[in-house]
Length: 463
Image (cartoon, rainbow, N blue to C red; front, side):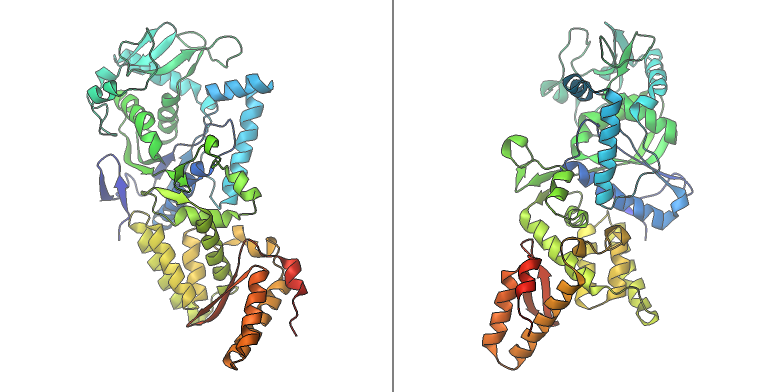
C-alpha cells in the first residue's frame, strides 16, 4: 500500500512517488526565533514528525532526510535586541535552545538538518543575482524586489489570480515598487541593524528568499515534500514557488499544509487571554505526551480546538494505556503486536489519518493487547522511552498505584457481594481524592484527574 498524501498544489490526494526512493527529502518551514513557540507552532512539528517517522519506516531511516529551518534574521529579533540591549546572536541562540527543549518534550525527533538563515546569506545573494539577470527582479533604492508580473504561474499554489490578490492586497505600499504585489528579496540595513555586504549595498534578506535558497542548497533543484502551517500557503509559500520556479528550479513535488489551531473555539490571542506557549502548558503540569496526543487526535487537514476537556480526556486515555502495557511483548503476543502495528501504519498511509490510528490503539487497549498497543503507539511516537512513565513523575508513586488498585478491588468485592453502601463509599472516597472510577464490561477501570491529591489518598483507610 502506497503512502497517499493531500497535495495542496494539485488539490488532490495522491500516491506519493519519491523522486528517488534512496533519497527521500522533506523540508518544513520552521520558527522565527525571537520568543517561545506557542502551541499552534507545535502542531506542524508533531504532524511532520509523524510523517518523518512514516517515511523512515517505508523507505529506511538512511534514505530519508528532513530539514527544518530557523529564521534568525528578522525585524522582530532586531526589535527585541534593541529593547533588551542583548546581542541578536544571544537572543537567537537562547530561543533555539528553548525551541529544542519544548519540541523534545513533545517527543518530536530532531530533523537531520536545521539550517539557520544567517548561515546561508551567500546562496541567497546568488539566487537574487540570478533572478535579476533573468528579468524577474529589480533593484530600487537599495532594495531588490521580485516582479510578480514576470511569472505567469504566480498564484498557482494558493489558487489566486493576480488581479484578485491586488484587489484584496494587504501588502507594504512603497513608492519604489513597480507593482503593489512585488515582494522584497533584499533590503538595506542601517545603524545597528544586522547586515551583509552585497552588490546592492549593506543589507539583509527578505523572509521569502530564505527557504528557497536553503532548500536549494540542501536538496538541489527538486525535492519531494515541502510542509508548513496553512497560514504560510500565501504569501510565503506562493513566493517561494515563484522565485524558485523563475531560476529554473522545480522545487517541491508535494506541498502539505496543516490547518490552524484554536483554543476553546477562538483564535489564539494575548488580548483574549487564551494564548499559550508550549512552555506555559508544560509548566501547568500537562505532560508533553498528553499535548502530543491532543495534537494528533484531529486530522492535520482539519482545524483543531484545544480545550481543557480534550487535555483531560487525553491524560485519562494515556494513563490507561500506560497501565495496560507490560514491559515487553511475549512470543505468544507477537502476532497481536504485528497486526496492531500494521493497522496503525495503514491508517497513517492514508494521508496521516492519526485519529483512525488512535482508534485502533483504543481497541487494542480495551482488548488488553499490551504488545499490540505498545507497538502501534510507537508508530505515533507515543508510549516510548521519551515519555517513560510520566504518570509517576506527576506525583503518582508505585505505592499510590498499589493503594488505588487495592481500594478498587475492595470495592469490586463489596459490589459483587451486594454491599452497595461500602461499594459507593469507596467510590466516593476515590473520586474525592481525584481518582475517577468507571465500570465497564471488561471490569473496573480507573484514571487520575488533574485534581489528584496523593496526600489525601494516603489518608484513606484500605483496611
